[in-house]
Figure 1: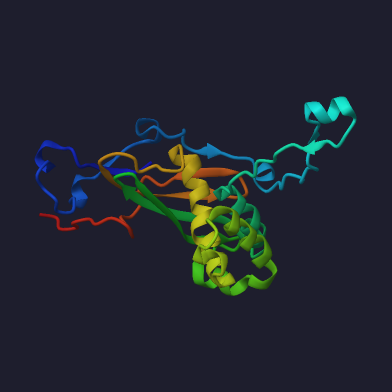
Figure 2: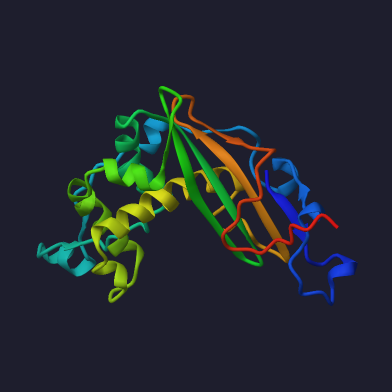
Length: 230
């Protein structure tokens, strides 16, 4: 699963310098506390949009006894998850011919991040994020994306008025990867604890699998690594 460096090593207690690449240790999924490898998911269930149900009407006691008006029960709106981003963008990715997505992640000290590196098409070619975005119709996807981000961000957030292109990039680059990371690494925040970590995995859309890459390159965006060999 991830390559991990423990910041509580005795030789690190008074050392704030970036950890050396050679000191990172690869931990298989069970040892890190995540799921087994590979992780299976149902593409059909992931892409299923639950039907909007009519508000349930529950009478208050006095109204019921007097035969008066019934009050609608309070509705709880579920906060969007990375699976919601998947429901928006994955059908479009598959329409482009994508069969797999290769994602990376890093983090530590209670922060974790995941992002899409590229997708693999049926013919074996690859598309990076920028090329994916060029091939998608942002106008078509904007209503669904804006609805997701308005539910995810508090009123007044810049995401409420953010350009549709920014919302689409976030859903494609981060939502897809966060979906796989949550399945593979066992939760939404997989960088808990005094550690630095990095890794990568593949989401196989055809087989419904998230597969760890035990040979992931140390490509990071949010942590520092000392790559010196000495």
